[in-house]
Image (cartoon, rainbow, N blue to C red; front, side, top):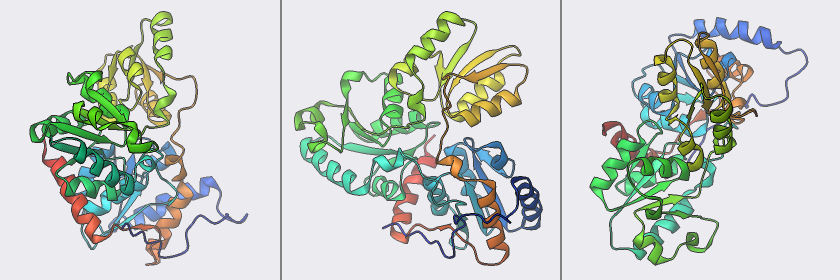
Length: 367
């Protein structure tokens, strides 16, 4: 069972009128971060806004930050991301280190689409429906209890950066794949590896037995969980087709959490790191429509003023839960550390952490 410790008063209470202004918060943050530089390291996910990411000592996608977390030696890791990321950092860091999430409300709707009870029930049904060996793979965007499930059942974790390598490994270990919680990453990656859509089925935990018969499970090569990222569902194939028609000089690159039709219509797809590296390597004057979270898109546009970079969607595709990590809460977390009264500590219970670590280390060892 997951055990979260919010040891002291959360900084989420309404802010009195006499509190610092937003500008003063940034000034104070720079001061206190410098003061505590030997005690605190800050990790920032690509989707964070600029006023938060400026304080990050390490930035990256889930895979990069997981690798960074496993190598850190400072007593406090301030994770500017969402809940499951902070859990992962806690699992990979030493027992005497503490991981802090500046706002405990920073979660992930996709991660919430799969829970341990549903997974256990589905797993029992799938095992009873086939004699073939099923390897469970969970996207890193999930609770620690699900990471522990794959650790205990011979599976691995994956990220959007290494999904292909992990899935290739899984098919060397078994005949079938259970991929959760994001159906789109699983479908897009498997299709790209030569697995046909006819060989994939979707297990919907909201339906009796997932909406699948034993015959369908036995026949399938890939069983996808009915989960998705709401941000990436804002990008559509029609947006891609409109751009191709009206702006043929623009290349469209999207994240594999987008739906199948959008990924197929785009010129290219890949993780946030892949997108960043692809644009970095492109020549001056290149034009890119990017299908991923708006903060990363805007940051790329600022970083490469010699290229035209804009969001594929005309609407604001913002990760609202990531947005909950704000400079004001970051400052409150720093002040609590300074007073030796840390708040919003993320702690995964020992049993869950041990099994999760097996799955995480398995992922990090697969090339």
